[in-house]
Length: 163
Image (cartoon, rainbow, N blue to C red; front, side, top):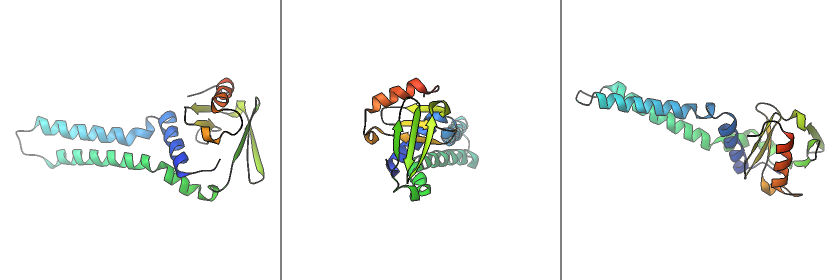
């Protein structure tokens, strides 16, 4: 497996949506609240002159919503830029009933299943969290021995928290 912008985008979007659903959308919620407030104030005082504060609320809401969508759409590119030196490295995963091993560049790291804090599974991605923020991910096309579904079953059996 190697890192690409596309697979990092999918991994970080899934990470944000599954692990930090509120924090990942705080700009969106704040923007919607500002937009809603500006429209309600404008509608309440429709017979009076338009106050700049109402327009400011509406514009600020639109800006916050736009910033949220731009940020979310660039997660993979930002991660790829940070990991650029690792993008050409090929990572190999080996799973068994005790845990898994990750090897790259003649080094390897072994993790027991008990060390995995949580896992996030869907039909496109398997993410294994070794800490609150650090995760490893695999996609179905990265599996060379066995099947993605059998690997997901092993993870469901051995990891205590599966999202």
